[in-house]
Image 1: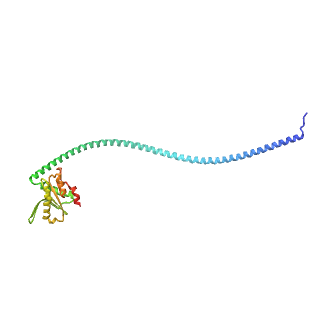
Image 2 (image 1 turned 30 degrees about the vertical axis):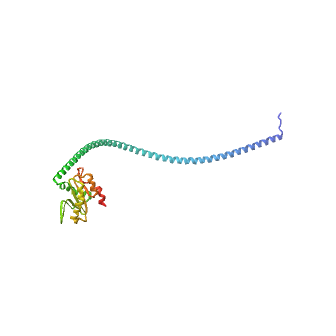
Image 3 (image 1 turned 120 degrees about the vertical axis):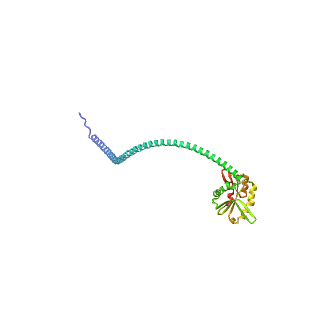
Amino acid sequence: MAVHQPLEEKVKDLENAIRELVYLQHKNEMQIGQLTLEMKAFKDEMLAFKDEMKDFKDEMLDFKDEMKDFKDEMLAFKDEMKVFKDEMKDFKDEMKVFKDEMKEFKDEMKAFKDEMKEFKDEMQAFKDELRDENRRMNKRWGEISNKLGTLVEDIVAPAIDPMIEKYFGMEPIETSIRVRRRKGNLKAEFDAVAICENCVFLFEVKSTPRKDYIKEFLELQIPRFRQLYPEYASKKLYPVFASLRIEQPEVDFCTENGIYAMAYREWDYMDLLNYEELEPQRRA
């Protein structure tokens, strides 16, 4: 026999069921709302992702174009490098040939240098022989001229003009040897005289130079020359004491008295032995 539930209990159960249904409905609505929000956020994210993917696609297209250009450039560069490599190979071959030619040239130049050194040594030996022979001849010629009394004519006179041109930079207007002049009771003979535009060179020549001769030249011959040749009073007078060979003490004595000493320099050539020492006085 069925047991009938009281009406109040049925109503209460119904209320509880309705309440539970309302709660479930409210819960579902809240879940649906939350899901809607999540779906909207997801949709927004997907739209943003879509835009990013579009930008990325565009970038990839640009990158693809750049890579294509780069590939074309690399191909062109590869072709250029191939040409360059071929040119370098040709250049390398040419340099090898040039290197071989330079080696041959270097060997030839070395042989030529050795030949030139031998020739130079031979010429130096020949030059030394000529110099020694020239010295012997000068010495012998000086001795002969000294014995014959022609020292002025043979040795000194030929060297006067070249010496003046070399050291004083001028060419004599007139050069005379064994010049004689008389003026009243005064007379004298001078071994050599060279007349230039603004100066006069007076030469005293001795076969055996001594200080006494130099002193006599200074104290007697030079004053006589000035007295006998007043027409040269306005010209600078340069006294020169000459011989085959003058020792250093006599050279120093000449320098102290403002006289140029002229003799053979090691029997090579006639030269002024104290030009450098007297040059400051000349320019003063």
